[in-house]
Image: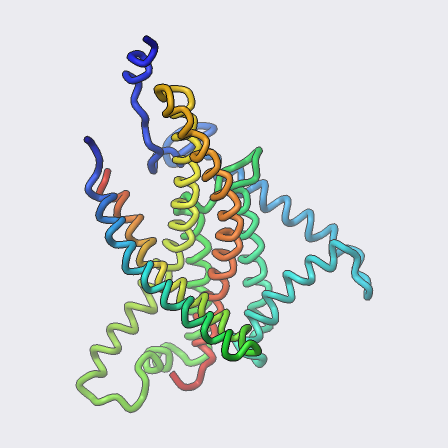
Length: 69
Length: 260
């Protein structure tokens, strides 16, 4: 079986952002469920948090391709 | 048996070199596919914008209504709410241009005759991010002067021994981390999304044409996933355009925030 260790590394590194994004949207859903009128404000904050968290995964994929080459 | 012939051929997974597609010439001065898409998108956007805004009416028509909706999103929910009502006006053209340009370029990744996301070549998001970088640095220096700009990096009221550390950290964030993350986020999302689509399409094709027996059936879920992720990419295209200008306006807003 052939493959590349960098891709397994990327899979492992994606766990962190996965948990983080899950927590962010869980908080967003809970917030909107409690106070539907603040949805607009929360949406911007949630997307901002999602983006900052996701960037770790994006760095991971860039580095996975760097190291697999 | 035909299986022996097909087993000899090997599946080549899509990788980074698949995105380097020169049409004319080669090397640093080649005319690549992404350049052509970028030029087409720019011309298309300019034509559509000019046609729609040529005859503006108080009661908007269909095209004007849609364009106004998009403009309203950028102007009100991003520009005004984040930069603040006192200073947001000069930045609206920049934000709106970035939003439409990135959105349409990202959508080109799934629109059939083209199907190539421009932003999956890192040069394009890099240029856009450098534009934003220059804007927020120049705005910051113009507002406070270089000394004030540097001084404003450190929040007031910190203990003296922490100040140098925080200063270096903030300077690195300002000068290096921000443009790099802005670039890599857009690039990484479009690159990863498109490589996933390539993987499902090429994998499905390989399984269908070269798979043995029942393996041919596995190509059906592969193609289904291709369609599913194409739809998902529409969401990503919009989200990435939104996020790019959201972060750009947050960086610009920091210039005008009086407390840190």
